[in-house]
Image (cartoon, rainbow, N blue to C red; front, side):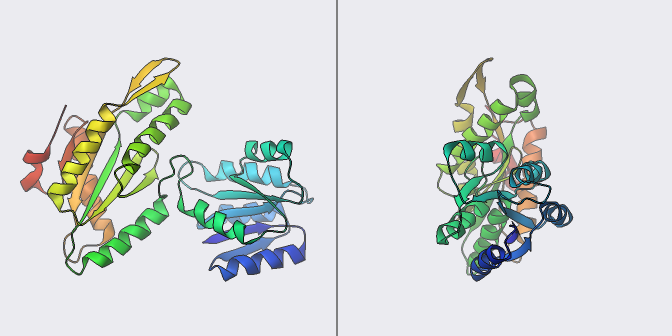
Length: 288
């Protein structure tokens, strides 16, 4: 993972850099917050920021946390860890309000590396795999299925999600995403949030028909969900596309075919499951 590290102390930068590089990470150390922010803007592969709260070079660590959170947005996860020599409840709250994902004491220990690995693998809103890790696991699953095992991909998203945000607000939109994620995670397969309200799922050992049945169970569970909001109860539906891996097919091709089926489910009326293979489409288009 590519990490930007900011600390005014050369000794501390060297110490933390060596610690992280020993864990296989690529580290870009800076003494200046402005230079660090410019690096993150120029390099979209930067996945984490670790900054001291005491930079003292025109941009405080808290300001850098905030600027990084603005830069990250919804489609580019950057995990932000603030380091400080003193931790108290007021300081912790200030750090989190400024956009930090975590707050650790100096000097950093092995726990920092373990936490960083966790944060780099997980979507912070849902607790699911983030996009990068989902694709890594998909590639590993594809390699395993070369020996003859089945692999099915399911792509799904929340129907009319923009309407949810417009009518109920983004906080309820986040609640909707997290609630769907919780139902998907309960299935026990590899599930990832791929961006916004879109999710992906991998089912090893399942052929197309099994993936369709699994998607239909999840579709029904989402349709039965009721969320209480200040504007009254909210119900949700999701649309699903399912594809089974073909010999020689890449992960991108597998997921693209599932995505095409998801689009067919959307245009076919939403709240339904569609398979990527036209032969099965009439059998698996399920509407409530």
